[in-house]
Image (tube, rainbow, N blue to C red):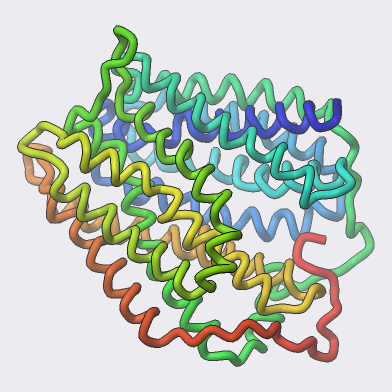
Length: 418
């Protein structure tokens, strides 16, 4: 029953996140005509991630049980998002509302993980079966929006999500108790972000990896921010069983196929090594955007090319992000790994998203004319070139070293968020 309850938590959390975030750019472009702030809006996710890391590390672990805080934050996220769904004429107010929602929501991801880890005995064996329900929730959310004609262009996904957030908030108070883990400990800001460990790491290859990963967050931001708007504009759809599946539903193919790529990742890492897997992941981003850039004719999608660009999502994401997490785990001793992962999250989901979303927004605006038409080929070629150049530089300069970094004196302090 505990696993079932945790699985319901994961399903609701990722359903609520995916049901409105994926079609957000389409709603802002075609429903609200807020094109100029799409990139800025998605960049706020990175700011919220940075702030939420501080919040979890310095407040949540010291003063309140995780399940209670999850409930409070989820209720706040639902209320804020419902308010955002009513804003239709003020871009600045829309941005503020989105930031408020992101600040509530961003902290719920590590909280849910902490609740699950605290309630199970063998995390390596039991957690994947629980976490997969988050992916299923994301897929169901996309399919639901995809089968409701025109839903992506309205506030309906936001309203659906706000309702699920509120239900999740109430449900969270019934979850297994997860008391504060560091009530009497003092952890510095540097330790929370992993800087105390990372800045002592001298291996050149590691910093090449960090720099290239940061660069790849720019192409990732292009996809997260504008892919759905692009697919909707090119009328990407499928006719299935007498019904029409629109772009948001089709995008879930990326998550469906991702499960297969994720399963194959340990085998590929053992056979090919971390460098080749990372190179493949970087190259897949370049291939994806080339497929998008040439995958349409006028206002009509060339289905095979766009579908392939969606399906390789698992290679793009898992071969880069998940492999990167594994690489970082290898480079540090057990006492330092949590802080090292916190730093990687700061680079990828924090700083990388802020920079990437704003670059994507600038390029999008540069290739949008006064009438609202977009030169998508020019837009997609920018992240394609960035990904390709990063892949080449990484392949030429990265020299893999599998030995973990030696522990240093004083390196056994409490990991971030504990």
